[in-house]
Image (tube, rainbow, N blue to C red; front, side, top):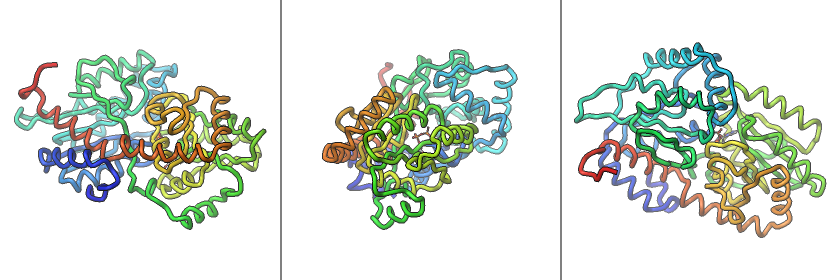
Length: 409
Ligand code: UDP
């Protein structure tokens, strides 16, 4: 219920949501992505859909289904859009479209607003319901990944679908593309009331620490991420190894599988091998619904890293800041939007830079605590779920009324 956010989220966001809901009450709002569990998109939708329903919006969330061949293709495409060079055949693109065509039979795509998340379900736009002008629907494509420097042929194949939408939404302005449709910037968000982020008691935190065998007698460095090369788990271990020469500390790398990410297991094995038999490196693969465990680990940590080398937004950064932790993040994607360098944490460009900042934080607990407090307020003002709901409803409302008594821009 939106009322529960009163006193936690900025009041202005709650007032705007109330007003927008007066206009949108009873209308249907369909979200489609490619996984119910794992990764930031599922994390947000899990929390946002019930809240929208509580606001009187007929919100639904569906997931497209695919086989291993489809998800290998879409992960390859994810990597290519984030700048990797990959090999493609026409047959692969045909299969991508074909899986979307099959999915359409099991999906009810008739809604007043449809928000399609990421490239996997993008071709569903071909099955848009044509409605009379008075009941016009709005189709929005929401891109969560960094497509600032994509493999050109892959973007041009995807773009064929994107331009058929009414609107494209990006997380960071530098990801936006030159498109003939309207574009909006909406940053992702965290839910302060979810199990992932709610306050925990000392005994809840200790119980998780004991159960997962996390040492509490030395400083703890943490990174929470899918096992994905762009999250740079090897770079995190290298930074820890530098720090370890000077400070006794331990490193926890925690990840969970995502059904639309087939590379996780192979990368986990690489990371384990690289870590060797250092008893102070703890590599955990937790089920994707272990939200309270992640929350407790983040609260146990002295320093939290998100040392990505490519990143869409990096929800884990805001999650850590909400827990008043200083965060060290790679200077990529949405991370610099969240970390105000030197104020709420540090943005770094190398393993050595990360190691230097870890040591600085460990040596200055007062600075760390000040950064943590500022970080929490920064998240409160910018990255809570209520702000994202406000933005989605605004973009929808704006599209619904497009062309009505407004100045042509
Ligand atoms: N996450 C989790 N368990 C894990 C690893 C990640 O619950 O073992 C969550 C994490 O807390 C965050 C989301 O998955 O809410 C990851 O979102 P982010 O934007 O950081 O990265 P993505 O995976 O979407 O690239």
